[in-house]
Amino acid sequence: MSRKNRQNKNAKRKPALVPGETQADKADRHILYERAVQCVESEIDMVDETFETLRGRKAVTLREDFCGTANTSCEWVRRRQGNQAWGIDLDTEVLGWGKTNKVGALNSTDAGHITLLNENVLTAQTPSVDMILAMNFSYWIFQTRAGLKEYFARVHECLVDDGVLFLDSYGGYESCREMEEETDHDDFVYVWDQDRYNPITGEMQCYIHFKFPDGSKLKRAFSYNWRLWTLPELREVLTEAGFKRVLIHWEGTDSKTDEGDGVFTPTEDGEADAAFICYISAEK
Image 1: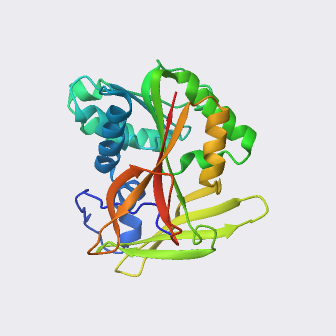
Image 2 (image 1 turned 90 degrees about the vertical axis):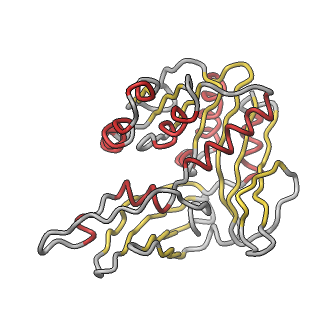
Image 3 (image 1 turned 90 degrees about the horizontal axis):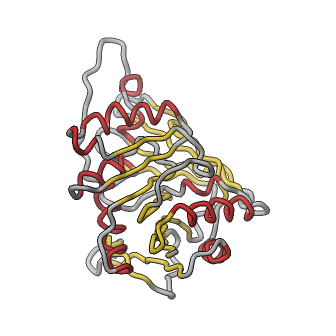
């Protein structure tokens, strides 16, 4: 199952090769990830509009947990003058890449509105913010109910009084299959690999691979050891952690293509799709 079912707007980049070098040797896994998995413009559209609908005001401050390259934080500060973002991640290498390639590409004013912290999301100290985002299913790293509740409770503390936590989630009967799915991006193939799933514990091991036209491969470019959480479980734990209202935002269907239309609407009635991706909002 694809980790994201959203059109990516990032421009294609085809780095030049030197003799004897394969496309996999030359590839930058972070750029490939952004092109294959992320669409930060659509993501920020959704959380920005939903926050205003829920709270009757524009959000200004955002914290991006498990931020990786801080691509989402960069989109946030570009969105409106005065927006501020904090990005938190334990991976020093990924944060460094983001600081150089994403934050470094911003103008000086926008770059000054981002703070990157190489810390644990459970203990990092940031100002209280309007929104906290934990996207790309990153919070699934917490594999026990107690651990997940501790994280959600910590997030609750770090929001302003009318703050909102946004998550994404995926499910459907393909989500627990051991399978690979390939998506062609012309100059590379993105492979989502659900390598192993334990139905007793819910633990799953997933990888992202990339394949190239010259036959070379970038195996296990990214690795994820998660628990596959269901929507009822997530809603229950969020409520136990203190959130007053938890909404599931379900994607509509394009009548012409029978694919997702990119419009997410709160609902209590989802479809039993083979694979779905949705958003969750949790209001303090």
